[in-house]
Amino acid sequence: MALTLKRLSAAMFVGAIGMATLPLALAADSQAPDNLAAATRIVDAALAHQTQWTGPTTGPKAQSGKFIVYVASDMKNDGVLGVYKGVKQAAKAIGWKLRVIDGRGTVSGRTSALDQALALNPNGIILGGFDAKEQAADLQVAHKRGVPVVGWHAAPVAGPVNGMFDNITTDANKVAEVAALYAVVKSHGHAGVVIFTDSAFSIAIAKSDAMAKVIKDCSGCKLLAVEDTPLADTANRIPTLTSSLLQRFGSSWTYSLGINDLYYDFMVPTLASTGTHLVNISAGDGSVSAFDRIRTGKYQAATVAEPLNLQGWEAVDELNRAFAGDKPYVYSPPVHLVTSQNIMYDGGKHNVFDPDNGYRKEYRKIWGQ
Picture (tube, helix red, strand yellow):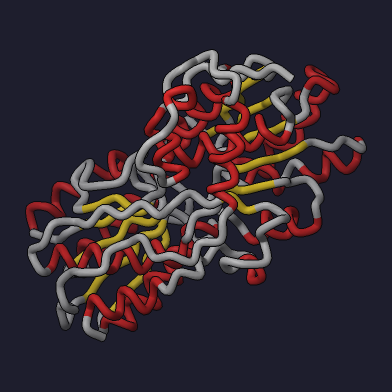
C-alpha cells in the first residue's frame, strides 16, 4: 500500500512524540516510504495514558485576597463551562473570590459581559472562549488599569498575545494534525474528507487549514470540501447541510473532520435517517455527547479533547504569576486523542478528558496550599 505524506514537519513529530531526535527519513524526505508508520506513531502518542505531569513545578506562592472575573463566551458551550469548573475549583484552592458573567453567545453579549467585568474593578479577568481581538477596546482599558487578562482559546496560539498576559490553549496546529492523521491512518490513506469550520474564530481557521493540509498531503486521500458554517447556528444549518453533502458526494464522503464536536450533535439524525455511516473526528473540546458517541461506537470515532478542568487551574496559576510580577509560564498540555480504545482512563469514565497526572496537587504545591 503506497502512501505519501508530503510535508510532515520535524516539529510536529517532536511535539507529538516527545523525542529529541528523529530519523531524517521521517523528518524531511517527502517521499519517505515509512511516512504512514510515522503518522501512526504520532497517533499512538496522542492515544497514550497521560500519567506524567509536564507542566510547571515552580512559581510564586498564592497571592492573597484577589477577586477575579470569568467572562464566558457562552455558558451553554461544554468547553467554556468545563474551563469555568476548573477555574472555580482552583480559585477556591488558592483562596480567591470569583464571579462569572455570561456573554450568551453573541458579540454584543460578550462586549456587555466584559464591560460589566471591568465595572466590578477585579484584580484579574479570564476570557472564556472568544477572540481577544474582538474585544480589543476593553482589553486596552484593562491594560491601562493594570488588570491582567488571561485567555482560554482567545487566540490561535498560546502565550502573551493580543493584549493578554497569557492565552491558554493546546497547540491548534498539533490538535488539527493529530485529528487529520487519525483519519489518514484509520482509512489506510484513502479518506474522502469534508472539513467543518467557523471563520468567526481565528483558532477555528487555524485548525481547519492545518487539517486540510494533512489531507491534501496524503496522496491517496481526497479533500472533498471545507464547509464554513457557524457553531452558533449548527442546530439550524447542519441537518440541511449534511443532506446536501450526501447528495453531492455520495459514497465518496467517508470521513468528517470538525473543529468542534458540536457539528456532530446535529448531524446524527440525518445520518441515522439515511442509514449513512461516516467516520466523524473532531479537533474540538471533547463534549459529553462526543464521549457518549465514541463510547457507543456510533457516529463519532474520535475527538482531540482539551483538558478543560486542568486549563481552568492553569488560568488561575497564570493570573497568580501576573499578580506576583512574574512572567507567564505558557504551558500547552500534550495533545490527547480520545477513542474507544482509551476512553476508560484520563477522566473518560466521566465523559471528560481529565489527565491522571496529579495536576491539582502540583498547582497546590506551587501555591503553598
